[in-house]
Image (cartoon, rainbow, N blue to C red; front, side):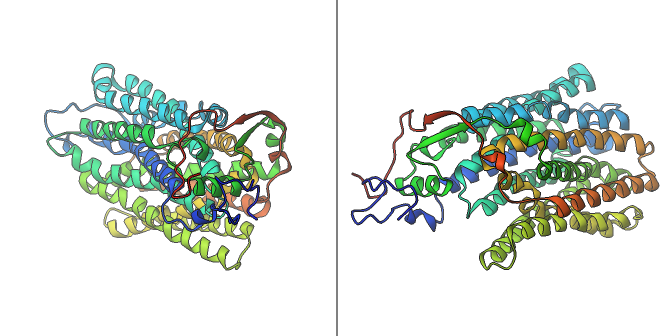
Length: 487
């Protein structure tokens, strides 16, 4: 008998065969559509987040953009300040975002955040012209506030839609959207900046893409399976029963703040997330400058080659996800071993690769690009590592846990570019960049070591916290299509 089955005609055939079984091997269902929409959400979010990393090169270098477009005299410290300002707002809404997503549903929260961010992105060229770098910083802070809800909302959506069997794979697919958005934006920004459209179009194109996504999300997404208007009864029963939802009732639990903050496995997760963000965002925000200043690449090659490492990361996400599924399906390794193995691949291989990168000179373009591709590409393994560990530890509080760790981790995203701005007082000096790479390697090493030794994958006792509210998830009108099994 299917777990929690009520033997009614909605969820069973006449011989009591659960129709939820039909959805188990489904190639593309509504749950997959939600993950596709989340993939697109992260694509546009990262496009709007990283567009400035390449655009700022064109905005401050007359040789990198078309005549007729304004060029600004911003020094390296000012540029680092601008690049880091996004995260000042981003960290503020992480924890509230997790709480709001669990309390009111992730659909509306994500829609509001990315819609407003899209409008702000469209305004950046005008703000730079009117108010200079100070107004650009202000807009980027507001963008960060809007995007701070993205990861908590995505984690909450995944915890409601992905069954335990599909969780690792679907999570990896969703979060690969961040690499796809990075690849598209970094790969096209240089060409756009040097085209007749000029650097302002970098912001216009990404802002319009975000607006188009918002329309699709409003029409096709739902916070939970019970709230989706076109889901089949079979798929709904399969998802809700797999997740342990009984009689269409969603239980909302008190957040066990003290237990979370005193949990050592959660502390290890927080530290490894911080280590990851330091390395990842240093590479993402500073590599265009490094390749332009040290390797002497023009803006077109700079943008395209800066995108290659993230293309490798996007592709390797699917390879690592398939390998993890194969190992788990055949019971070759435990869940704990899988998380730690792939996290080690994602942190310690880049750690080793970054060390020789500091000794590359401008005559060794190919070697530098290869090392960057390898370093960044391997980090995708962390999507099957620490990135899903929030749901392992406490699926009932996944959004809140992601909000906490992402908040702390993005403090590193603020500090890292500022640290580069302090260390690299002469951006053409390879020795100064060498110090940056050595520091990144050390942080990767100690963060992952802590996760290997002390990280856990078992649900923690505080996952089952007291219920403060139970609601009928079908309180709002829902039209369920029963795929040929109507009453």
